[in-house]
Image (cartoon, rainbow, N blue to C red; front, side, top):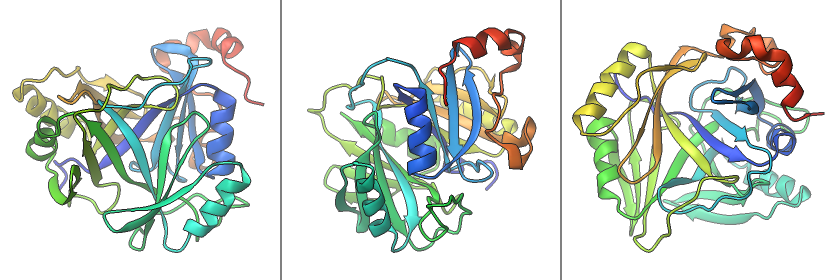
Length: 309
């Protein structure tokens, strides 16, 4: 099992306003700010990591809140929907809570699973899906107790003009299998893990190409045990004729990036070293952590970063 793709590691999206993004995810949805750092390539922009108490892979939604970037357009070549697992019987709580914050909520069903769909303040499309088998530890708040708290990712949905080239990556390289199909919607699963192990594909050749900005997903990261396994997958991706980056040290994991044939930016990320490498567990997300190469510019960076309080 250890040399396989272990489901989703994290998903990274784009926001337009740092404070609004932080407040919505921590105060409305009740997830933990696991890490407050900056974009490696644009240190004047925050990089927020939201997850459960430990920032366990498969629970981590991250954001680049580029101030004033404007709204993006969901479409082909993007991960268009993020599905969170929530406890059985909690959809009523979430529908009521979201409506209290003036969030429009739609009830629905996909592959026999009850869910609610809504958008975050930037238009990012989220789905809360009931699960009776998810035993992951949750992060709780004064308003959101264990019986309702978000478990972590259930699935991610890719929207593509043509599904087959992407399916080959999921099956031949990542080890996923087709689990269900309804028309042009496909669900792929890996049995390497029990949660955050689903990728849905919607095929629509009429779909316009998406444009990355606020309210869209930047990339989807898949999980591997460590950097030795990471490099094994680098060779597999290269052998498939795709371009892939060298190994990149992201401080909390090691990464590779490549664009799959349908246009979605994929990342493969490691479990090691984890989010407690520079903060103890009880202090995660409480202070600004900078990549080593930017530490000498801390004062300047802190001056230009948006105010969060």
